[in-house]
Length: 161
Image (cartoon, rainbow, N blue to C red; front, side, top):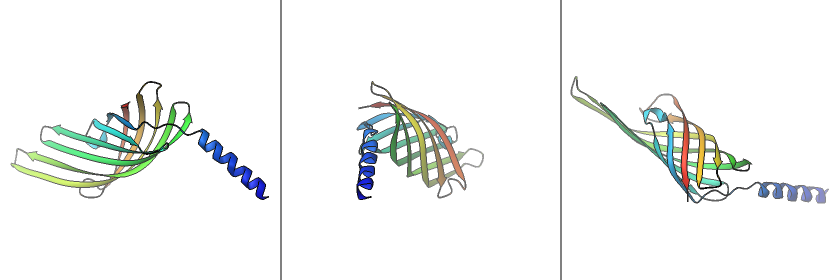
């Protein structure tokens, strides 16, 4: 019985190791989505190991009487599907600020906020240094930012180095 358990563990370990993929040390690009009104975000990924990485996104918005910025950091786990296709999931948090300027009553309403975020997506790693991804990120506002969950879907285009 011990030999069967040991053999099963060895086969399982070999299978998991054979499906490991190489995550780039660095990837820099854009995350194109709604992002809760912040629009396009600058996105940076830093590889930690074969299956883990950090992602940092900076979003900003400037529309007439509305100025805002948001920084989100995520820890992601990455699994290989086949070839260059991977899927990933992660969790993290963010900080930001919004400012509203109302010309009618000449008031300035500003707020600082924090948020918790999740992330799940699929990506394709090309043979040349390009990474395309499509992800879904629910964000839960922890302050006055929102009393509900904001669902963000985005296309990521990143250069790997």
